[in-house]
Image (cartoon, rainbow, N blue to C red; front, side, top):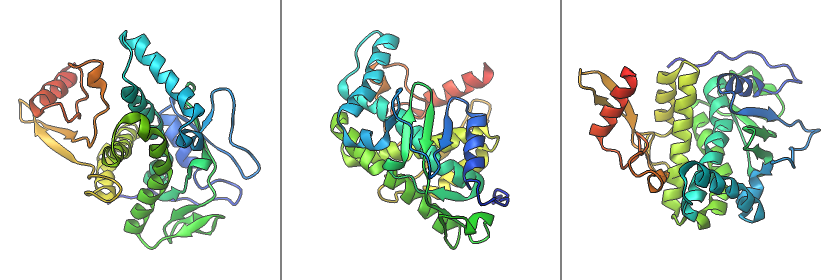
Length: 285
């Protein structure tokens, strides 16, 4: 397995800066900045702390009002409350997972990001994070940096990725859960999809899609609590024998409630025949 090349880290430079800068470079819609020990996370002007979303109170009401308005504007009909909450959770959890998975993918460094350490400005597509601790491998030049915690091998580092995401999302899911009318298994199914599809998409943008898929498979090889299933990539045969990559989502975003005929290509409701038709049509286009 090819692994990223690690470079030395100056004492006054964040060990995660390169990964977050690369993320923003290939995906300008999401700008990630780090708050130093001397700085507070931003607030006001549309910023919301992840801890406020987890609390499930007025801050979450205001956050979901954006999704409610967007659904009505774009689809000409109101969304059910659980659909609004599902959209809102996806739009937070997908980028939030990248705070953990991209430094791991690019640098083999896994930051801890509790909800108190993250703020989100959705209108501008900005995340702010304050990292005090990260896991890394013994040969990482950053292993002597402040906050570094060395783990023995790649599997131990994958365990750190799963633990960091679970630590962040557990209170967030508890905040969103009552509004979504879904049990714990369904909520963690969504979390499984956010990890996998975020890494898959960014891998494509980085020009490393095959490695991203392989890493996702190793990260989520099957059900590893609290995550409900593996990355679940598989191949289909196209009409000319071409191999088409798809995956089986563990959850449904409920978009079908707004556009019944326009489901995601990886949706549990989309059969393989339709997946092939849509993927080959996209290739021809």
